[in-house]
Length: 114
Image (cartoon, rainbow, N blue to C red):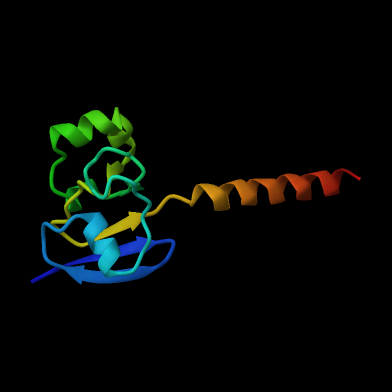
């Protein structure tokens, strides 16, 4: 029996074996999670938000140290977090897309002033 992982905002789902990392599952589902260290918990680029932490295996000491308290807000490293039950994973907005979105919002606000 597998676990069901849903990736938002892409709204893609995949069923995988229990204990698979979120990063491995994302690759199988063809959902892009940024990383430079290829899953070694070195780059910290693969942070994801997981509202239901009970669906993941407990955090190892390395991940806890790397996150520096962000785990208390529901963040985990996709390369380290292992799914043990059905879970929904919220992917952060790509930094380039975020910068473009902010620029467009600022332009809209400036247009509204006139």
